[in-house]
Amino acid sequence: MQQILEQFQDQVRAAANGKRALRIRGGGTKDWYGQRLEGEILDTRAYAGIVDYEPTELVITARCGTPLAEIEALLSERKQMLAFEPPHFAHAGDGGATLGGTIAAGLSGPRRANSGALRDFVLGAKLLDGKGEVLSFGGQVMKNVAGYDVSRLLAGSLGTLGLLLEVSVKVLPLPYREATLRFEMNEADALRKLNEWAGQPLPLSGSCWVDGVLALRLSGARAAVDAAIRALGGAHGGHIMPDCASFWADLREQRHAFFAGDLPLWRLSVPSTVGAIDLGAPQLIEWGGAQRWLRADGDAATAERIRAKVAACGGHATLFRGGDKRVGVFQPLAPAIARIHERLKAGFDPANIFNPGRMY
Picture 1 (cartoon, rainbow, N blue to C red):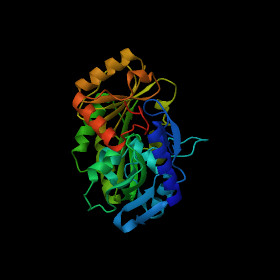
Picture 2 (picture 1 turned 45 degrees about the vertical axis):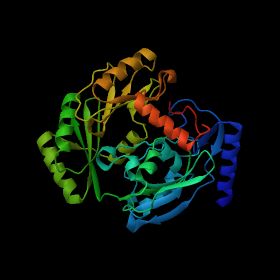
Picture 3 (picture 1 turned 60 degrees about the horizontal axis):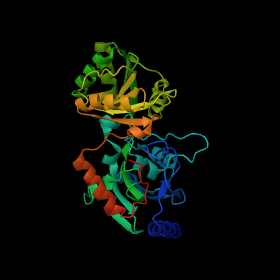
Picture 4 (picture 1 turned 90 degrees about the vertical axis):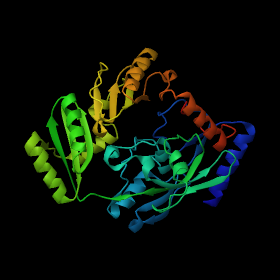
């Protein structure tokens, strides 16, 4: 691995000296996410392997090129999981999602509202910066708080700050029991109920409303899940959904029928307490109301209308997939925040070689 690391360092230093862009790439499963792709590929997949795994400490450390599927299989053997439930978005012919790409994309799955976001589980990281130097942040145990902010800063940075070499991630035990209840209700009632249930001691681990149906996942101890089924099913007419594991997997990987087709996909992030937002297009609602998917045009006029309406609710909108990326995939930053982004980029990557233009 030392030889591969030295090759990375040579490639980075040569790119910095020649002012050439580098495109950091693992399995390529999220090449479509973000702005343009630019530069010579720096393939991370050879730098792979589990560095350390302590099931009793609930921490796993692995190199950036390690397949996400390999990590999840190892955790499953010890009845543990990545509680932020990251999507793979893998397809036949690509290399499969890697841990480095997963952290860089910063995407969380259906459990996010109840278990926490991906960045909340990042304990420490090693980064190769734009000077070819290896930097270490954070630690490998949950009680180590040094450098947390810097480690988590890499989550969702899309490789623009440097090459994430290694990362330590907190894991959690698999729940003893899971069940999903299905309710027929309109959007407004679903949002009201989700906020009402969020304030109760219920073992919630996922929610999805689409086409007049609310699916509510319950996870935890058998007694707690069974009690919640009796309380919610009896009082609100919920019915147990068969084969619920495949439903949530399809939702996480966007294989659900809602995501089919070529119409651009918008991701809306709003406070969960916001009611129904009328944008004249179909929506799928997750995370107790905090994440809403919208199928709508991706042109400039539509982008301006969507972002203005979502901003008025205290949220932001991302052109997640498809559409005209010239409108900006991510909602424009406030000037003060943009300056912070610029200073961070200059500090970690002074020659601007890593994934330039991928975010803004």
